[in-house]
Length: 114
Image (cartoon, rainbow, N blue to C red; front, side):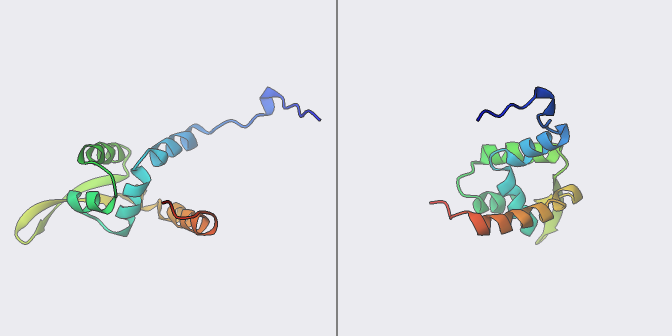
């Protein structure tokens, strides 16, 4: 039995959803967001929290996420020295509910990667 679907009845991707998937789905971005959802971090701490990411790629991804309004850099004083901390903006923090749902799904359906 052949199923015929008319072109005009095919689903159309929402441009906003497409853009969101490109940003969140880009390699390393979701892991950066996941780590920053837990706590703001300095660059080295963030890099050390994500296995396999290079400094160059992390810098590039942080810039992209910053341009999207998801990540921000904050200067703060630690032990008398100014340091840069990476944090999520309100827009980035709002991803928490999506990541919580993804965790539930992953716990149900995914096996740990080897």
